[in-house]
Length: 109
Length: 121
Image (tube, rainbow over all chains, first blue to last red; front, side):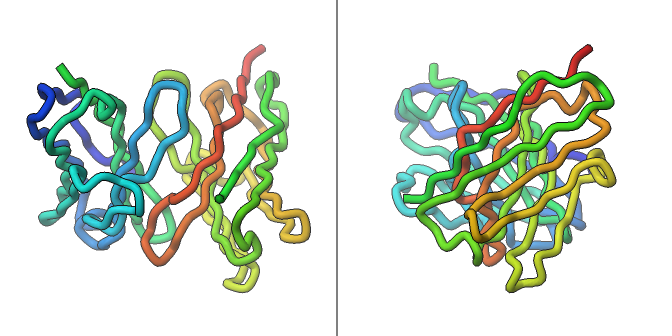
């Protein structure tokens, strides 16, 4: 199964909002509510930011939000801050397997 | 606090074998579903496979590129997850992370720091 499709890069200025898309198929994102997003800073382990499309784990700022429409999921980061600069990966359950997106490098200008 | 600590990485020749371990603490390991996720240098995350808790059947699922070569197992008495890797290829070179997999939310909630596997002659 192919990786989910993400734009390789995204950027925004401090305080702005940026949205990262994640496109799959009717066999993964379109079929299940199990879409999650991960943040990864250089040299660090990934960190769960969003699960079940739009839910935030305890401790994740409410500046991070998620949504889904059809086969495409989205992560929106509002009120960009310097520490948000990182790689972001989407992931979806796909029936006894999990698929990740190729990742998006978010740059805070 | 959940802690996952991977070990066992290193340099191995193509065709060789390696066994990774992941020591877990801060959670009821015997009830946890666990995954291995890898990341090749400069690349994205790739799911390797997962193992259910023994109470849920202990079954395993694998990604296509590793199926038949890699085996995930667990020792609940030692709170440890394993990844046995055989017939290693250069494309298996990556940082390997263990993580908890919450089946109720389909998410990897906790991650270890990773262990580097390099397959090279």
